Image (cartoon, rainbow, N blue to C red):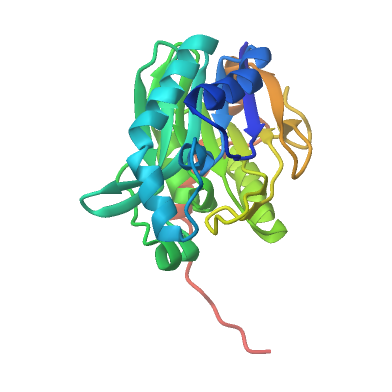
Length: 289
């Protein structure tokens, strides 16, 4: 059994990096999880450390990117101190191609890898100048394989399918949505991806208000851990969930062997039958009545 946690996280200003790390340790360590997912743009905490934050989006992004190395170091330290994979926690990072929305995989021994968001939202494109990431990372561990689809990426089934084809047992979805409609889209997409991929999908949302930061001025969501509703799994596909729109967590013991049996022996065969979509007759017949 693998202990998985999803954090609903609220960004806030702190006096220094030691206080920021203490916040993360206080939230993560008591869970005794093997893997903890933090939300999209949780890394903007880095721009809130020890100084009066900027007011315009461009300055927020520049400061977050400037501190991205420090943020990676913080995640590495927290992972080592808690013994957990600490994942998600994205922030804007400047690259030669432009700013990307970059999430992280911090291993319990301190090594850190990244995953950039592949399909920016309209606000990220027009308001922030975020450019698409390149490629998907798959992390192969003793507890199973997992990859990451950052927020809006989860709404595109082909991206999740690529992770499933790479034998991922779990897809991590750090999210940040301002409106209830956005939260619904991401949450329902996560549940759909769990059905299509017959895998575990973990969603961690940013929550609460951050005054003066138009990137995350108000965030809503509900942490959840989703599985295919099939043999041995909850009938509604919800393995665990936390409270909506408030800091907290969802926590579950996941039997990846049982999830794997669903792919092989389930009531339905979504993964096995996926290629049939390319073979069925999809010619459109327009009927005028």
